[in-house]
Amino acid sequence: MVTTSVSSNPQPTLVARELSVFYGEKQAVFDVDLDIMPREVTAFIGPSGCGKSTLLRCFNRMNDLIEICRTTGSMLLDGHDIAGPDVDVVQLRSRIGMVFQKPNPFPKSVYDNVAYGPRLHGLAPSRSDLDELVETSLRRAGIWEEVKDRVDQPGTSLSGGQQQRLCIARAIAVRPDVLLMDEPCSALDPIATATIEELIDELRSEYTIIIVTHNMQQAARVSQKTAFLNLGRLIEFDETKKIFTNPSEQSTQDYITGRFG
Amino acid sequence: MPAEHTVKAFTEDLAKIERSLLEMGGLVEAQIARAVTAVTQRDSELAPRIIEQDSEIDRYEQDVQDQVERLFALRQPVAQDLRMTISAIQIAGYLERAGDLAASMARRAIVLCETREVPGLYALPKLGDASHTMLKDSLDAYRDRNVEQAKSIRHRDRELDDMYVVLCRELLTHMLEDPHRITPGVHLLFVAKNLERIADHATNIAELVDYVTTGTRASDDRLRGRGFLMEGAPTPDDPL
Image 1: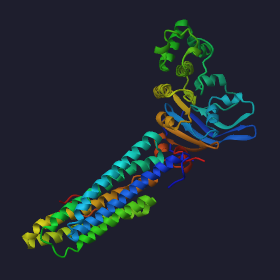
Image 2: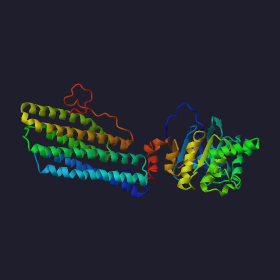
Image 3: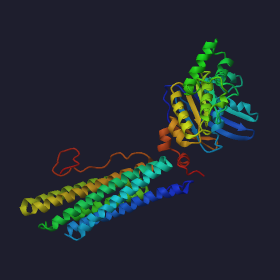
Image 4: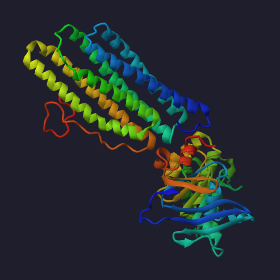
């Protein structure tokens, strides 16, 4: 495993140490050590089944929902344990939001999709606060201009790319620190993809982002750091530029140049 | 060559670029050898053929550039493939300039055939040979991705600079002895300079071997001669 030395300043937002994940008897992730730095985009790349989505889903405890899934090792968010049994996962998920592969708006209006989280967490005491929060979130997600006249319409009536941006708006409405994105563009056309990528770049100024992608060019375009995983192990983690011009590990090189298998 | 791509056509595209480059290199090597022969043997029939052949080298450079452009557009190479293709454009450029220098020597050979012969210029074929060998070796080092050989080539540049200075002094002595030798002498000085420049291009190619193979830039560790008429100057690259 090769990593760049991390300078003492700033502190990492997310830390994983000896993180392993098991599905029943089968181990899917092996002893991953990883530091995710604040306000950077970190991309997880690797072949299908390499454990990148499983690793991503550790950070907001989505794997807890799978009965046979078991996680060992430690995870810290801003220095606080998030792996233990006492962690309030609902609270955790408000700090670590997630955007999924397929846009999955609730069967509610555009407005209610975004307002759902803030209502749940009591973030907006008055109607006008909520209005403002919904507008700000939609603006940050780069979709306000397109939906401002139809926030009462169902979220599912939007186009695929708009739905995905709506889901991003919904995720950031609860003011998380971290956004996890699991192949957020894989169901979108190139133009909608470019819009999301531009959005990711803008969101980077306020959020720490981890993105899982099958599209290596996308990883190269949007991320500052790239982690290459293979067969459940973190093979290489470095500056994205370094990974795509001169990776240290032969298997990274083989994968990104299309020589795998 | 490293393992093959899953998409075989990608491997073939890269191999074709490499092949074009090495063919181009072979052609440039031949041009240099023939240009030196045309000058030293006073062969006025050989020289025009060399000048004519130069356009083929230009076509090769264009061809390599086109192939790389196509590969960038269609396959977005990364890592070793990216470095290899970037280097290919650069090497094609160095070879094209080396080819130009050979053609320039050929043009001077034509003039030299009409002037008085400067006798006993043993250093000229030696310099020509050294320069030609250096280019050949640098292309071999590139083909074999041989970082050690590339390093030794870069160090050889110094010897060549020294040979160049010796030849220049020899020519200067001839010109001082007999003013009729000034015209051929000046042409021969330019021939010598061209050979020295070809060796510089060979050194540039040798420097790229490190980049292609390891991704790190070779430190500029070439040993520089002190140059002709420039004693005391720190790094006189261009004495004339």
